[in-house]
View: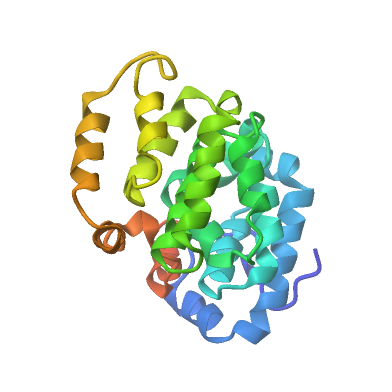
Length: 249
């Protein structure tokens, strides 16, 4: 990896200052190429990097490129997400559950196939698959894709591809179906919650289905905007890296 501007950060041992992060944010043209290079390097050397544990530039690259809404990062981030669990867990750690869905949605380039590929892959980590489902809700909530497109895909998952999903992922699918309003998915949600699919029936799902159905789609989507998990990556998200990046390795 032939870094010019970001070479000093290649191994971050004592954290990263907000001044450096602000410089990154404010100089997109200067740093974007190297951030994309870091992403490619991470995909190509993931096995080695996850064992070393000292390399954290990939986290910085993912968050910063997501803040830039740089669609060029979409294939690389999707490739990282599809890494085997034994590699992606030490490589991304809490970023899987705390930021990956927002990162994916922020760099989305109009092609849903990479996200669908993650959701439907039994080889992917279950929490990564859940993050991919969450990214679809994020895209809907932020008006990037139409709700009907996701409803159509969710129907496909329920009716034709349920065998590809683990119990954890099915539970997440139900949760995300409710978060975009259950209209058009009521039958699928009820069927998934009748005990035959999950092996149990959840009263909470029944309650949420009734509650959400009583509201308008617009109201439910507006409420979802208040959830941080459905926000696109912000400047504050990048700046927050100064609190932990390189400090816990």
